[in-house]
Image (cartoon, rainbow over all chains, first blue to last red; front, side):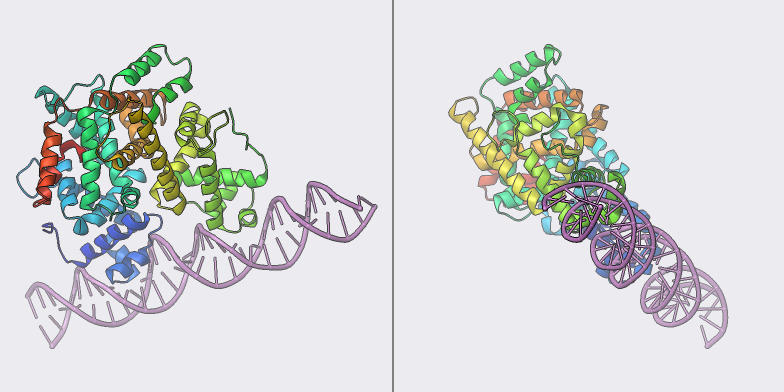
Length: 224
Length: 224
DNA sequence: ACGATAACTGAACGATCGTTTAGTTTGTTG
DNA sequence: CAACAAACTAAACGATCGTTCAGTTATCGT
């Protein structure tokens, strides 16, 4: 169930300790000494192996990004969604990685930006396939739709602690994943509104060339 | 266009400087001296007015939460969504507050948790109203649906920098808000899938009592 | 005008930060 | 076993952290 790169070298232990702590507290709140203690080594060794805290951070970024883009079996090598599903299926083992991944998108690093864009591109491709195979409805703004779906997915990743608390389950529990997934599928299948009143109102408002910005904002209602 | 609490006391200047910097870099990466420099005062004065950095943080939390729950005109006093729409309509002025708000939800503070739960409760009420007035479709899991919509909304808030980059606009630009809002309304109105095949498959998989967790994960497809 | 009170500064304190350095242990290779 | 390289530790360095403190400036009621 573990990854093939499960090496037990000291360097790997330090890297894993850093991923754990950065995922929990964030990079700025993670000291070299704390990483060393977690890995059971001295502080100097952390710097000796990575050259510095900044390099350790990028090493962790690279590791996580490589892992998120890797699939053991079959599939195309860049399938990020499949990787995340695999991670979701063995939550205890992968939770530190999921935590780190969240941080990657919220402290706006270059690595996080590249990964985000790659996921958007991949999602756009999946939507294209879905539309051309007539399983999904086309959008008037395919790029925005892909971006929206990625935002929704990563939003549930980043806000996992709030979701778990609100549902009174553990983080990334099967129950919360199932309930949130079904709620999403309901909307993705039947929509939320019974008719297209709100959508039309929004399009009308937009075509009047936003005289009053506030109006459009209010019109979006639950969209926020 | 400014808030009524636009006081120019030194204490308020320090608090605003802290909100700006914490919103930009995060609390752990914001020093008392940096806040002091931004406010144009000495470092000691920051501590003198707030008693310490931790108290300054909670003062900022309280300020933001009070502001987000406050409406100048008319509406019920706890309307968070309306406040956010107001903020969205004057983006240059409110951007520091939006940044700080994002941090509130990502460094899992108690204040952020309380605000999140309040937004969920409020959204659940809006959904109830929408259903009972026959404007929205009912859900088999109303709580999960409210939680999902809040997650989506706050996701677009937290991931704003990625959204702006992907759309090649400024953060919280009108163009990006409009495109993302319409993409969301499309899905909320017509759904994403042309039929209920995926939804049914997911429900079938769930009823088999998750023998293989991986299957359900895969079944959710673009839901991630 | 004057004492009291609050606002405010600049220097200093101890703690902790990332990093360096010197020296020790460990492992490999002849 | 000798010799060299890598792994590793403990101590120390300078920088910066939050906070304290002594002293100065401004504010204000009487």
